[in-house]
Amino acid sequence: IDELKIQLITVDTLPTVTTAFGHSALRIYIGKQFEENDYYIDFGEYDESAGFIWRFLKGEAKFYITAKSMALAYTEWDKTGRGMYASEFILDSNQKKVFLKNLLELIQKYKDGYEYDNFSGNCVTFIRDLVGATYGNPLTLETEKNRRTWRQRVIPYSNKIFWLRIE
Image (cartoon, rainbow, N blue to C red; front, side, top):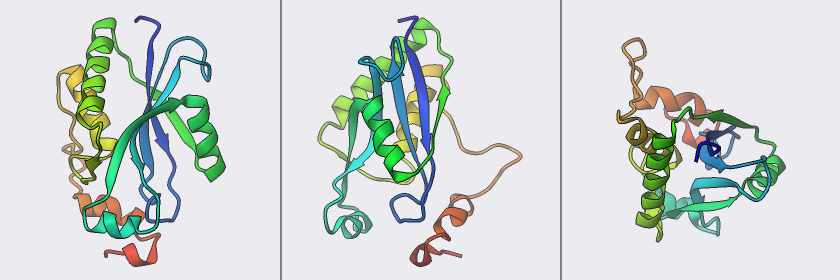
């Protein structure tokens, strides 16, 4: 388990409803990057068929936690022209075990999908909660210096799309 690497993957934004806020995922690998033991864990897969936005706005769209090869994920994101950034978590062997245990429990819990929620059920919140549980300290968005509201945080992203402007 000492050789295991766990990374946060952050994906750039684009000016569409489903890409305006970027994306986050996990990368878990042992050995060489982009080979057989290099996995991309996505917390935001969804059915892109007709009517998705309407189902999403009504709170009826299902999202899924999926795993695929990092090479495949990289190729898919590269086609969109969005940048990907990796940040490695510094974890000891015990923390890696805790992280993997909690990740497997999360995948099992939501094997049939989940409903998106800005505060408790999306690609960022699942990772936030996994990291907090691993370090034994819940992560929060606020600091004493930066007391911005959720609305203040999303305005720069939503204003890129005409019908999402909320100012």
